[in-house]
Amino acid sequence: MTVIPTLSNGSLRDALLPPDMLPDAPRDCPVTLLSSEERHRLIERAFSALYRWYVDRSQRLRNWNPDTSFAWRDMRTDHTEDVVQLIEGYFAVEQYAPDYTSEILRVVRRSNGRSNFQLRWGAEEERHGDTWENALLFSRGRTPAQIEHYKWQLRVNNWTLPWDDALHMLVYTVFQERATQVNYLKFAEIARGEGVLASGAPDPVLARACTTLAVDEAAHYAFFLEGARLFLYYFPEETLGAIHDVITHFAMPAQDIIPNWQVVSETIYRAGTYGPRIFQRDVIAPVLENLTVAGRKALDNGLKHARAIPDPNGNMRLTALWDTFDAGEAERNVLRLHDKITDFESSMGRAEIDPFPFQPNPEWPAKATPPTVE
Image 1 (tube, rainbow, N blue to C red):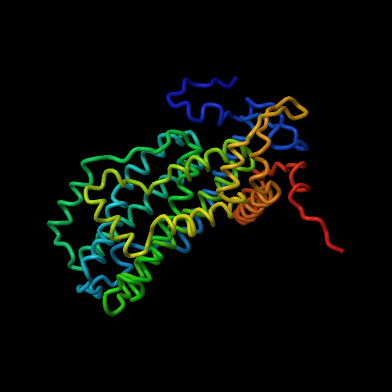
Image 2 (tube, rainbow, N blue to C red; image 1 turned 180 degrees about the vertical axis):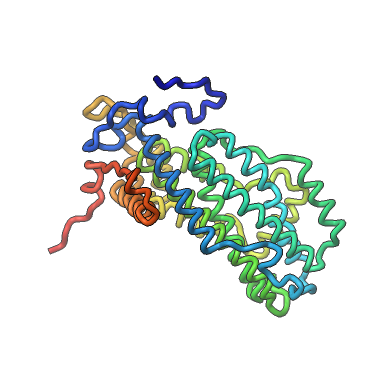
């Protein structure tokens, strides 16, 4: 007999029951009619598999070192103070990688896939901090003593979660990783001699560092996006609500505890690497498109006019929200993830022993499939 231990953290209390504690789930009903426990079990299986797929790809394609993968001795030493300030600002944000990792682990620790990925993510984010420290040091923009003092200032305070639940933090990291990627790509343009803050000749070392970090951020964004798609498929109403909350209250991490953030933010804004317009155009719009959400206005209206009515089985559903996203495409996104994971697990033999299930949703494809034009 399975004994459920006393839980010290209830954030995933109903999420992760062992299979022998669950009734056999029907495979021909909409996913929203499955029990919450069964849906969470399917999500957990997907996260665990996605994590292993991610590790394989990361080790093969992005196995670089912040000290030895860049020709730091060749970095320019005549950058303007604005460029140095950008380097210092991004260094500051990445210094809180231990906090980001430990705080998020606190709310996802019962999930094998998400907690293991968070450890991997933390290690990759930590090397970003080391990369920016090397850039700051070899630019000669700050002395070693100044860098050490700044690190001490940064470590006085610790970062805490903007939301204390796993779903909101998953959605937050989708937008945050995309925003960070955009920052680094635009800074790479400056390092190549483009943009209003470009200072003289290009700096290939700095440009390569920026683009390398941006590739990491793109990989992180892709992982969290797949996770958000899973939740949108299995828990659409809760996920759409979390997306709305995050967009409404979004801020890049650690702004309130970085001692010179006012100077950093002004430099970032003048440089054109980030700002409200960029956030709307290059972060919100593509993220919502990737999540099949019609747009911020449609999401606002859907939540404003949401009305709970019972479905044929007596379950309450918020009607207006179902018009804010493409349910059929949401299913196809999860199906594509299923096929990717199945291919990977087949290649290493796991699929023969523990096949990865997919729960179709018979109600959805017909809603999203456009009529055939004769």
